Image (cartoon, rainbow, N blue to C red; front, side, top):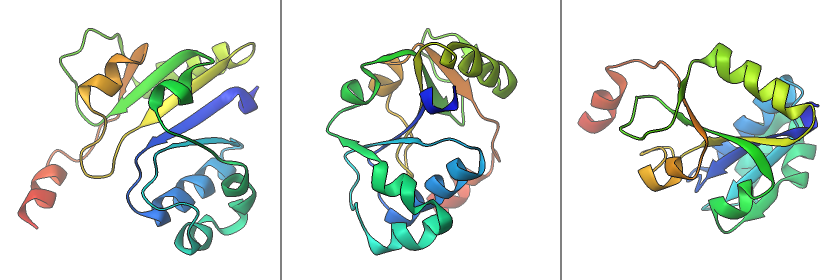
Length: 147
């Protein structure tokens, strides 16, 4: 069941973030990592940050587009720190988890994460079925802009 849940990362800039995601996935018993146009992968920094999740990095699928990453998924959930103006149904974390687990019992599903600095584009989100808004520190984007 959990093998049917894909974690999709779009154009990850820092290779260490790929390793950190692999490590978090391993902790949650997830194993299906898909990378869309990563800036640097494979990379020693990704390996270093992955810890005991090197197997996830080695089995990661690298593709050229979000369409390829999600082509076989019957449920695709976009993540965002803020609500967007798209017409997608919005989910909280509990609802998203419930839907993912239920659908993954018989089909492939995907959770899509965007670029470190700007997240998912509206075009990326429109390729998904639903949107998960993950509450975040409302001051954080301002801190990034000031630095």
